Image (cartoon, rainbow, N blue to C red; front, top):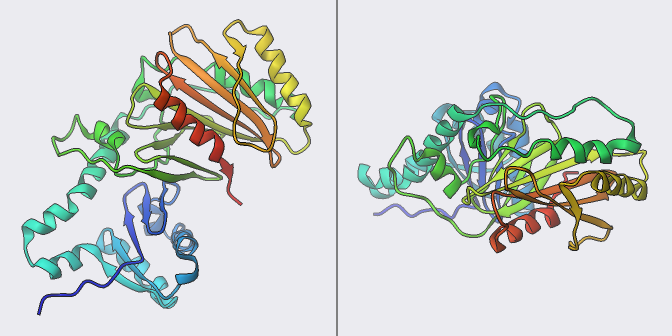
Length: 329
């Protein structure tokens, strides 16, 4: 009798530097890497993420895990203790078809992702720096603008954004294909739709295929890159517990008035708070459209950095990021 596949509520893919959760929503957790499960500090957070995604169906659910056998064993016991049913993806596919060729077809996308991740890690170099000392809340806005504006000449060094200790979100994306292109000739992977990406406290919705990387020596700024090599999205959230939002906006305006590369622009976001929009024109010919606003005791800043003129697709991706970025509670 052929094997009857049991419906899966969520698929968990564990890579060396990321975990991918495919359920009611797809979430990429690059702050919960596979080695974190091996070392023990990420296991509880991985289970919490699964529980959050499955919501009311937890723990009466079936989870399929695609990972190294040693990692699956580390996850099986705590999940089973909650009453969750576990299935190992590769073993299951072998049972269904009992053919090596089909198993290879099933696992090829994940193998390509791992190659992409490894290729990307080998090219990561830290270069750009930002002022990191603590400043008075009154001047946070000015410091944030000056520091981000000073880190714009990156088009000539595309591989220099990430440091060796950066945690990266890895999805089935064209961005990953590009990273792997120099190391493999595997067929490209493309999935449409949006994804939720997280980096420590920051959560944002982006078009599928984007990769997040923490800027070197800058714990407050995350850079999103995706299928279009001419676009990068900068995300920053600075705590400002004691600062006055109108005063922060004024400091940003003062900085814009003093810098010939900056100019105010008319643009609105779907926000319930005032948003300041401005344009930056660096000497390298690129353009950056910025949004800045104060919300939930944080100064948010989102920069849409295009290598040349901004395209409609650039604006759409950046607007999605700006309107959805928030601090995880």
